Length: 135
Image 1: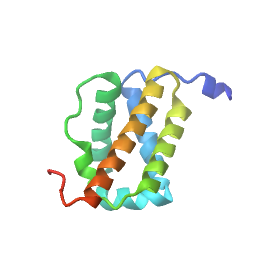
Image 2: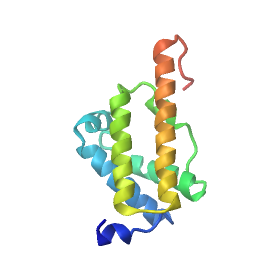
Image 3: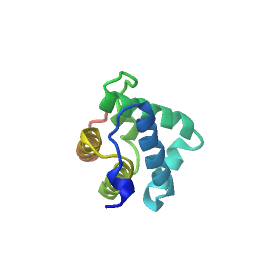
């Protein structure tokens, strides 16, 4: 462990959430597998997407009501599979670990993993059944 890693603090406020989100999506945009999917959908609307993600993670981690909606619906028709989720989780965990340590950091990784599992389960369900998600 380096000195920098041992001095990491937990995710405590909106500035920390923004650090997490900004660095994570910077990594996503540079990732060969994920960048094509994200850039095809988001195009030049990255600032708006990042604002939504600040609100989403602020709501989840800081219990500040800053996001409402159903994230799954935005992803329901994307061309994504297990390898995309595995890469997403790996990048997310790397990002959290690069900046933070503590209970909220652990919770962020846990929640991201549960979200990934739930999204994959739902996507598999809709691929194998005639039902469509309500949009």
